[in-house]
Image (tube, rainbow, N blue to C red; front, side):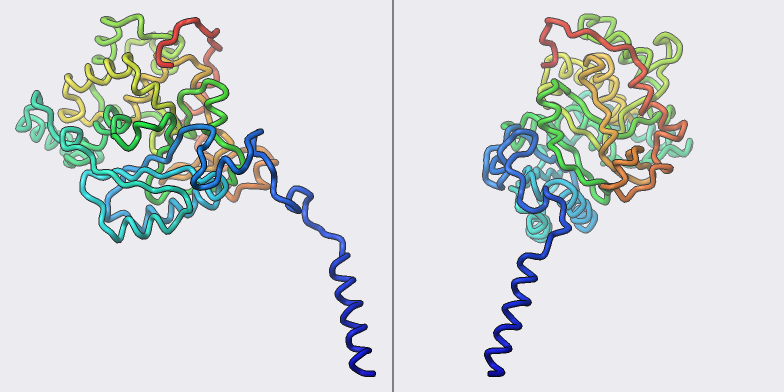
Amino acid sequence: MYTDLLHLLLGLLLAVFVHRPSNRPADLEQPAATIDGIDVSSYLPEAHRPVRAAFVVLVRNSELVGMKRAMRQIEDRFNHKFNYPYVFLNDMPFTEEFKTETAAMTRANVTFGVIPQEHWSYPAWINQTYAGECRQEMHKQGVFYALTESYRHMCRFNSGFFFRHPLLDEIDYYWRIEPDVEYSCDIDYDPFLFMHRRGIKYGYTIALHEYPETIPTLWKTVKEFVTSNPEFVRHPAGYSWLSQDGGETYNGCHFWSNFEIGSLAFFRSPEYLAYFDYLDRAGGFFYERWGDAPVHAIAAALMLRKEEVHWFEDIGYYHNPWTNCPQSAESRLRCHCDPAKSAVHHYWASCTKDWLLLPDTAPKDDTAAE
């Protein structure tokens, strides 16, 4: 009798539990069948995604912990659903420890490449003795990274060579990630697909003013190039973002390149390659400290239309000491950053919003930088 009573009570409890109304949102009851109109199966680890894209990471073996921290962020916020591959690049071979531990952070495909020596060394036209003297002089001026040769090789590589690495031959879009960066908002759409559908070539989260002492002759060199190649300028209004005096001097505005989502077709275009080669021959990567951020930004501002450059205001991002934090009340439901601390509220990062104030540009029939 007691056994029968016990079975009856258990049956009643089970019935109550099974039929208990759920408080979960309807979209969490069953997994979504599509994302942005794309079948979710397209984003399985071994599937062919709608866009040929990858995370591109220039990193050293010594930065393993910081890299894992950044990967955990991007996986939790975005890539656990989208499974875009990672391409790790280094001027030295990666250790087995680095490869094993980073690969364990994701279900996505992970590849590791060594940078060719000719992409991480002094070109023949650089006077290395004079370059060393220039580094010492910049050190006396208190310039950040004044003495480091590796920093200059890094800037030159990111300016003109990363997109030529064989591991990126089958990649059309890249997302740059660095160690120790943080992503503070859920990203529940595909930025690569977003850019592809809208013809966007370059995306940023923060735009700043560059330290002028690192690039004293960069703008002069750019103007020389443009004078010889005026047809490469597809966006004359870009000058008003780069200069406050009609193009006479450079105001330092640049997209902070530690976060970039971009089209590799733009960097592989004849226009950009000619631009980089001209800058490279001028020697400023070694005689001064030209960064890849202003190099990329000047090219994007002049060679791309306004509509081809996009501010990812909705992506919460932090790289010491700046953060981009979405401002809307809706964003707070998927973000943990403080909107009041976003870079857009600071003068030094005023270039972020200034791009939006440029006049719109009508599409042209030409295919430059497509």
